[in-house]
Length: 323
Image 1 (cartoon, one colour):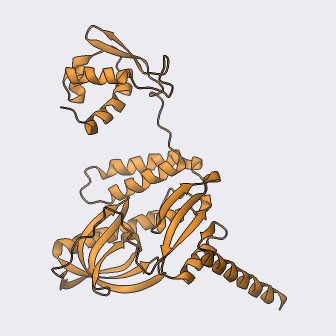
Image 2 (image 1 turned 90 degrees about the vertical axis):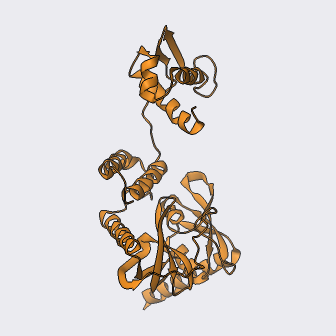
Image 3 (image 1 turned 45 degrees about the horizontal axis):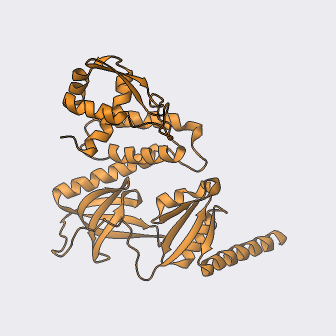
């Protein structure tokens, strides 16, 4: 048997494999892919129906059979190397870094080499505002945080930490009982019972500071349950408002850093997002801090508050200049 989850990667690998080995025996190719010759023949028959849009003569992959051997006579462009856009390269790098920081990865060095190659290839081709490198210091701090939490989980110890809550723009101290480490959409989280909030909470690893393993045992209450992440990490509260923002290319990082929903790609590399917030003054500061990189499309009250705060700041600046 060969399920679709196994067959698709095999089909994608078959063309470059056969291009590098013209005239290879089907039995030998089947052995290399770990399937029967009969299954490989079925794969080759399916490849005959694959190719470029148009799907007419000259568009489809073409194969040549000679008794028990096979060669590719037309590859439909599959010999060309994969080219990633700046956004695709960034997403891949984020996932690879999360993988590199995960305990138990067999060959971390191979992952790091891949990261270096993608960063080098992305180079100047990435769009403005897409940060490919997180910085060595930031990655090292997150890795240390992950390792400290892993040790606390193994020893069954509570943690004391200083944590930044982005949605409220607050930094506070918390004592938590760790439950598990998670990676969701390439971002590392600690799931723990927060004694301050008296509930289960998810903490982003890159927002944790001054982490300390305590001598006391971790003791989540019996009713503490893992978070249901089937709908995503962010579960909006009933008291939160929703803003719709249009981000310029240089401000697209907001969609990666804050909990939000990407609604649509706009012209010129802009992005429309939906973002919930509990404090209007914090949201106003965020928009103004982007320096024209974000436009509030709704609600009207938030857009008005942003305009008023900007006008007040401009008036104060003019007053100071006149003095």
